[in-house]
Image (cartoon, rainbow, N blue to C red):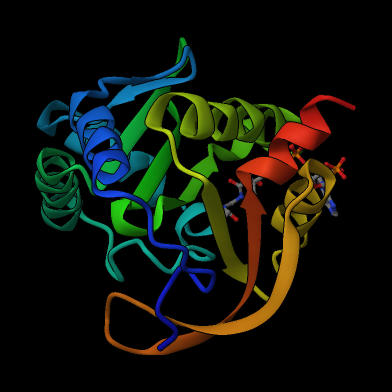
Length: 201
Ligand SMILES: CC(C)(COP(=O)(O)OP(=O)(O)OC[C@H]1O[C@@H](n2cnc3c(N)ncnc32)[C@H](O)[C@@H]1OP(=O)(O)O)[C@@H](O)C(=O)NCCC(=O)NCCS
């Protein structure tokens, strides 16, 4: 299994602490999403039960049911306390419309964002616009210098979305799934400096 991120630039102790503090205080992701709580077990289970949603995502439990989703939320709440992870959910008039899973490595000033949009909301540009909001928030509010992304080799929408935002594909890695098996993934990175120079274009 490949350990992420591939690019590792150690940050100062002060910066690590600032990132941990920003993560442990975060209760919403801009106007896009709010922190997931144990009250969301049923709704998140319903969202993730769709194999079109959970199938491509290696960081989700291998079996989706209220028990595994509760553990998934609890693990993220513990990660938030340590400043190392967040689970956020978006809600529309119907139900949970998306989830956002953020893994943070404060020592490298880096994070990974995963997630999915409910099936009836896909292919309408919402994944792309939500991702832009989330990446901006991760650089500006959480304060990371590097965002990395991983996707199954055949996940064309994710590849297009990331490359149109400016992520550079760094090749293939081996991802570990929650059942212990491994999967080949494509891997991308975006540095804060690259993000800033694109934002100034
Ligand atoms: C991946 C996902 C978040 C993308 O969100 P979305 O709202 O469906 O996608 P968008 O409409 O924003 O389109 C994203 C890109 O894919 C392209 N695209 C959309 N549908 C496509 C299709 N059927 N075939 C090829 N490309 C497609 C879009 O043109 C866009 O590219 P662009 O930025 O160059 O214009 C969403 O489809 C999803 O949740 N999928 C299931 C779970 C998943 O794969 N999560 C990501 C795991 S890393």
